[in-house]
Image 1: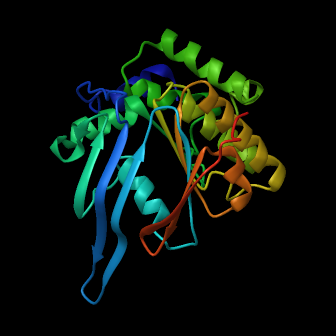
Image 2: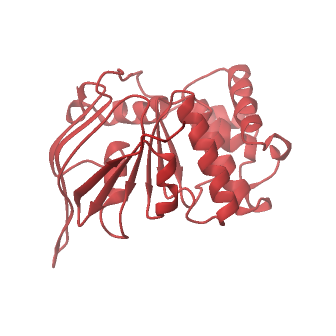
Length: 253
């Protein structure tokens, strides 16, 4: 896709600028999420209270189906709670419009998913560039940011390749570059090592550690206890409730 086509794709999607503050970055109070169908009522989250401070590396751990991904989706403004309050940068999220939420996701929050979520018909360069284009940045600005991000994950030599020409570990590195290119205040990672072997999994964790040391607030979901050593705090979720919380004073030392 050339630059003109990319510009046309985003022209109608730019949202009004909204920023979040740093004080009390994330504060969840009594968050509940219920999914309703004709036959069943599923309680994904039940009265979750959680605060995340700027610069934290927090890990949400627990078995499959305990509500980890649902909690991360609410934090990332991809979903909303059924009940409870969520303050992001001191502002109640329920008062934000859909456009404002989209803008915050694009400007302030980076996402890394287990399935990479790269766009198959875009090159590595274009996949990393796309979120920056949604910000309305000039091509020259985007180029600098994209190349810097790809350099950090050692993927600049693959910038013209398509996702299906990369290994799983390489695709996840591109996904990390895409998430970090815009220097988000918050980085949300949902099982980012789930589809990787142990070696590539540790490479991704080392990248996240470096991003955190450079100031990013990271909240990561995983069921793999091996990665707890990277986080300063581990929140244990079970049946939609926080049942335990541990602090790792040795993290990043």
